[in-house]
Length: 334
Image (cartoon, rainbow, N blue to C red; front, side, top):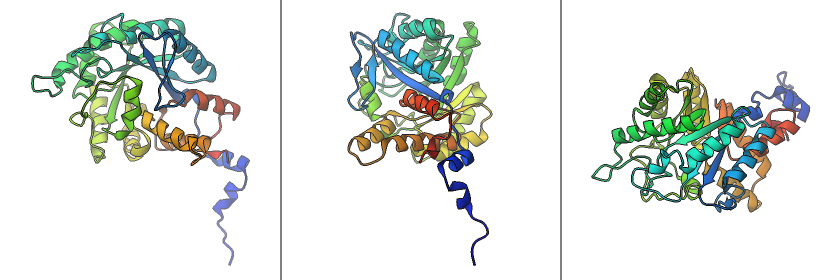
């Protein structure tokens, strides 16, 4: 007997699949992470992230222009200083590379896109940790909160519209929110990197920011074995005043992302990190996978799991592609 119910009816052609797609991505849902380095006369390629560079101020401005033209929702800035010290002094210096780049780009493009900044000390410390160290070499949570508060004010005054708190210190959202409000920056939003896992996928990023880290960050970033803890961290950050919560990395943590999205009453973002990017580019360069399909499928899966916005190094490329496709479902092209 022939089947009466035939789900394949809705898959019979590309136009039909496009019409029936449950997950669709708009360019404005993509945010481009960017590295701006001090002391460069021209952009410097990042070897483990083909196609990505450390920017000069001028090349960063050109990239932001490209992102705006493609319809990308915003840019997330990371600073790469020439000099570092134990407390990350460059992070709060108004003339430090991140604050200088923020002011430079916000003045030019702040009305056309959302300029965002990473708020963490790891790029600025000579030991490479995300906070200041105690006498025994451990990361001092509460002393670090005071540095984050000062960073928040510096970044807000430079023109950042969203501060991405990525250090995974307990109480960081509450302390930074209070500091911003006391300084008159009530309108500056906080993006909490709530469920940030101690993953092997950060390797290429450490090259991108010239990290000085030896060892690991397992005492403050989350254990990859823990699912419930990711949701707990997100709910704590929401209670402390986070405007947006983030799951990072994205692809290996879709279960956590789905949990957070189901429980959150604020926007939920995800970061498709450097290792996710590098693996796809490396496999594609060897002819092992279809690069374009893999990128589209990976982003579709992240949004399907519940992300409202995705930070991705493919933001401009994918936004341009979505524009040519008429903003259709990325996974439905073939």
